[in-house]
Image 1 (tube, one colour):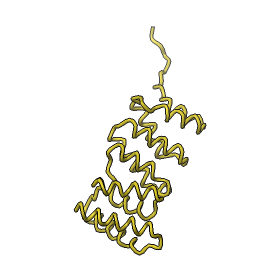
Image 2 (spheres, one colour):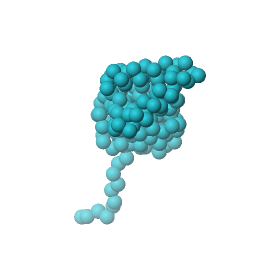
Image 3 (cartoon, helix red, strand yellow):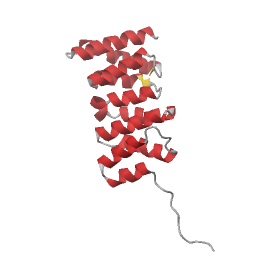
Image 4 (tube, one colour):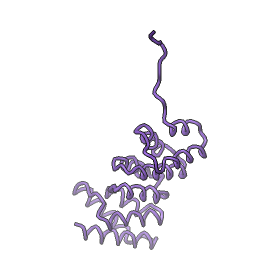
Length: 175
């Protein structure tokens, strides 16, 4: 006997939690992924949540869940999220997660995080410079980002100026 019932693919528990609208449940579900091997569907759902949420708490928990999976390809959703200018001041955990995955930070983004990021984000960004894990892309991007960092040397914010100076030194050292 043939069934006429349409069987839809099962959503991951991450998608179920995200769909519930309950932030506590979503954070708990993301935290529960730690130490497990999430399915590809669950990882896709975590990446989508990371890139779409406006909640810093959910975003950070999702980034750490991706870092815990240990798959280098999960770096891209983190970089995409870091490119959102609204998260620059809250990027420290995202950068930590990216580092845990062994990811690289695009130079233009690194320069912007030095300029607009929080103290934690600047510190994490400098770690990427120290480790030589800043992707220069092309010569034009390199020159533009280097000029942006040089312009920060005269910033009224002494921490920004100091971070820019160190970034430039590290960039020149790895040239």
